[in-house]
Image 1 (cartoon, rainbow, N blue to C red):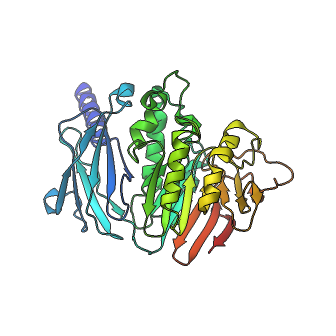
Image 2 (image 1 turned 180 degrees about the vertical axis):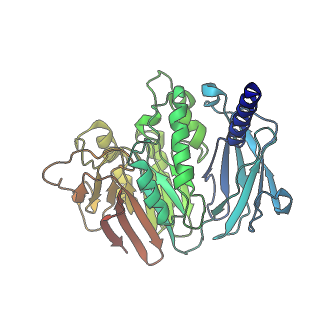
Image 3 (image 1 turned 120 degrees about the horizontal axis):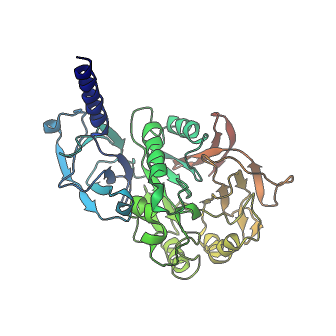
Amino acid sequence: MKVMKSLVLALFVMAVAGLAQAAPNHIYLTYSDAPESTIDINIIVPRQVDDVFVYYDTEAHGEEKGKYTHLVKARYVNTPMELADRRALYVATLTGLKAGTAYNFLVDEKKYGPSKPRSFKTLPGGTQPFRFVNGGDMGVDDFVVPLLTFAAKTNPDFAIIGGDIAYVNGLLGGYNQWDQWLDNWDNHMVTPDGHMIPIVTAIGNHETNRFDTDDPSLNAPWYVSLFGRQGDAVYYERKFGDNFVFFSLDSGHLTPHDGVQAAWLGSALKANEGMKYKFAAYHIPLYPTHRPYDGAASEAGRVHWAPYFDQYGLTVALEHHDHVMKRTKPIKGDKVAEKGTIYVGDGCFGRGARDIDPQPRWYNAVEGAIPHFWVVDVKDSGLAFKAIDHEGATRDEFTLP
């Protein structure tokens, strides 16, 4: 009798464990086109399967698939992360969405079962206001969860992460750490209304390995797998509404600062010269606050990118890598100038803060050894910035017309 009870208990535990695993491993949102009318729903399952479907609607229908108005079959994407443990990625690109509208969706697949019902909200478009958060250098250590929790409470429309995301160094064996990072995002980066927060990224040094190859899928397999469809290259442009254009740049990790990337940046900035707000995000700062000013990558950015920033009036550069907080004075021609670009950073969205100089550097208006993220409000009437630390305190704030 005891043996039978033990067997029943064991089978029950196995069944519960099976139910806990019955669902996609991860679901996260990115953009590959206009955020007012499209979204990419990225779905990771344990093994390649026949079909993955996404049901969606403006009304909430829970797990009742038949009540959703729209159905999209997700496309299988062959990624290098499959070499790690055979996990497979499927992407459902939803198009023709209404601006400023909340959508509910359900992911379903026969082998691993349905996801829990989820939701997201499209950007409002036009000149309507929106909000995003920015940070970089995250990992999965102690500061990450409180920072994500406070960031979600600000109710952002999306988040820009400036590299050094999970700290796996481009190694395929780092899937457990990526799993934890994705779980952290899924569990804590949810708005007060329950909406998932889309991810916009730039690449950092800890996304790459030291393999002697020019193949991005081998140099940065996880980054390419998870975030490699945001543009035609690792650097790309994205417009948010009629007033705001964003450039994600590669500060020398897969693509050099100069050459084709610099030429693309000059052309892209020229094409958007009339845009009211022009932002760039990248990993290694042109104006560092912990590392030396004359570091090779920082100098390369000042030589090959800053002249374009100056010529076409980049509004703000979002910098990372140094694990501190800073805001520069307006800079143009490598000097403080009234109508220059403001450089905001420096990537401390989870990692411990590093030391800074006893005296502020000549270009900084504010600096500190502070874990933090930035909240940016974009309105037709101007921009508002706020830096919030891991205890929810505001550590800096400023506005721009």
